[in-house]
Length: 477
Ligand code: DUC
Ligand code: ZN
Ligand code: ZN
Image 1: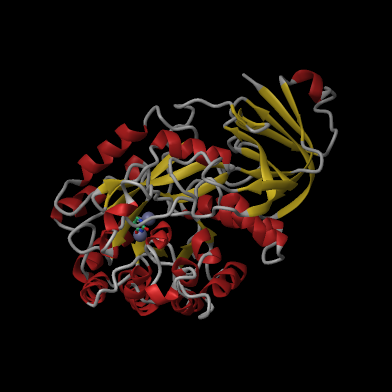
Image 2: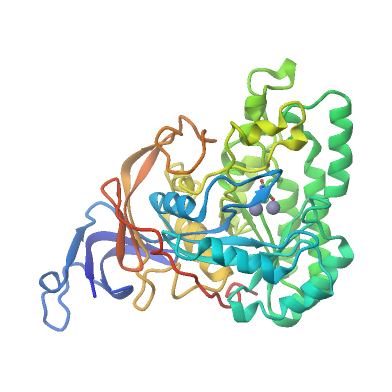
């Protein structure tokens, strides 16, 4: 078994940081030691296969992206990253575990959807992976299938208050699923937007000739997100089901989360880098008289980008500091402009919804440390430790401690990262972050003891990543 010593670095866990050496034996962290220590009198360096000098670098637990959609059939096409390309891009960016969404669409069987997802991922992933289950319509069959989730290592599932006819569940269906979830301990994840009302608004806009990508964000108004978030919270409270709102972008939705959390309810939320950095005004570009060009399709995702003038982005950063939002995922759902996003030329409703950011989440969130929005420990908490706790992997993932998986990133705080479609590893013909020049750099990535990224080279192989059977949430109040 390979033994690796990472020496001279600053180990950062969510609970604190300090100078320490990390010894990885096989796939597992064996010891976290005072710098230069011996072990039972042995000189450690002479006993290991690999020594990595992390002087001046941060040694952090591998990132966990708890919201990805590889190969998702959506909007008449399929998300352009496969499990192979998407997990490799994740590794480049310092993410060592992902949780993807197995899909049941309305009218299909959950077990078939899950089997399909296992078949897509098995033997193809660069890093470890788990699944949430999308339930695209609650009926007797799906309620029965939920009973088997925990044994499958799937302890969270997602429902949609949006996308009628595709993934949508009405309030009665949501109530029934939540009753079942409360019974067996599942975490309910909710896409909280009022889909039926959005569909009416979108049709009205298109009928008025307002059909450019910009109007995607106008149809999906913040009121639609706030209202659905409140409704989900109340249904969760009524049934006793813990609730996690995905891809929160409206400050009013955060206020709903804070209101519920102040009451001591098990209500949580994630945001994504796009809602911290990008805005509806950016999407409109300089062409405001023409309602924006089709270029804006690059940033069509749901929930949508919000107005910077209204202060949503600042509010997201604040909520990450105050723990009104607990973590940051990507909602990685990439589509190329050519042949995919362009399906919506002339009608924004036909643009496949999604942005790809899996490769840049760790770096983009590190900018919060650079600007003073976040401490180093809070950065690690948001991108690794809380995702592990929220989704039942903590101890094994999300922390540098003896017994944890050897998932470690060596991060250079003095390094530099340029983001461009010309250099990224995601299967996308554009970057939502084109031209970003940012501080910090992922130097080395170790995944269960194997060095898979080092010195700007990928050293892993498809199939390195294994399925993670997750436990129940470890974050509940
Ligand atoms: N939002 C997206 O942007 N893409 C996939 C599904 C979703 O809810
Ligand atoms: Zn969603
Ligand atoms: Zn999603």
